[in-house]
Image (cartoon, rainbow, N blue to C red; front, side, top):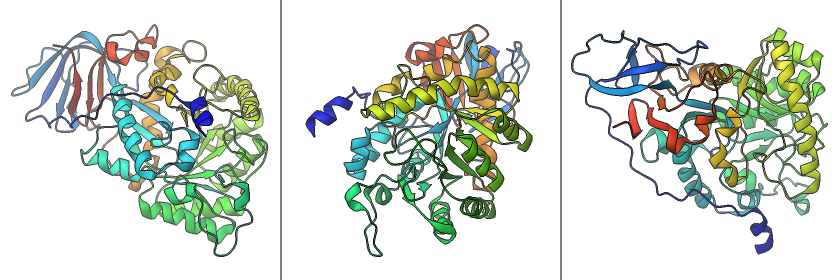
Length: 444
């Protein structure tokens, strides 16, 4: 056991948790800046940003007097929205897979709380959690007990037997009528449901707990032990039942899958967001575009940012997916699919410091810098808002506009040339604001 743990050991981010900063007692005016608003793929000058409470109140002209406001001189620096990771695992990114399968849930939550603060300090003010027991962490962040990004939780990933979310041991098979739930199910990382009635139950359970969207496993994976990558999971009727149950609560289903057949089945069933999909072909990409489906892509390139796997077979599957990743980005641009960006850092704590590198490295290989930056801000913000009435936050995210939530970064960097400045947040992120509260300020 010690040898196995040692093979995955990684230095963890060690700073202690800090108190939430106080809410400002008067409006804040950010002045002397170059603005990237998360929507327009250009920088604006001659405009300031007025923040009142937790929202952006106005974008007054530079030089316009605003009474009773605290003025923050940005020194001509870049000002942009907080970053959004559309495929994040708040409670599973900072631990190894062995820890996830064996550790006490209290330990998992304590690690997740520390990781959440570091995620925020890397400039990520919002995440869409793509499965895991994140409800308590979200509550703690929202109440100011822990600092971290705003979380849109999916709760447990819902999987068929032998699917991507089935992490039982072989000795736990077969499951009897009175067999206890597996550890992964007990802690809320994943849950198994077979057949329409059971799928409906599992979806409704996650909605009851506070899921803003539902995550299904619709095909094989790299990290799971039993399901071949090319396997198709859940029948169309099972998928359709999950979609209907989510729609009845005003929200949608996101689905883990890679292959054309699995993606097309999910689309026919009404799924709104395809997670991964790196093995999609032209027909499938065109179908996504025609149906207005979101393609949540991650830069799986089998490089130094890849999730860690001890199993040689899993590493082989990573190489297959990496080859498909290049083609997937090409297809998403060719057919103008609505494309989101996320990292899916999972069971790989050593990869956390390089979080933003997985954004920066996409430019200029696949995107112009401002194009991919708009995906990681305004476009991702549009995706997380797809949960409609299940959204517990009262404003738009990912944009700098009147009425939007005041999630703002002030940075040393020029996103018209490169996003490399984001890879060193300690040096280059000079101010981090979330919900109008300033968590970091090195401008003065």
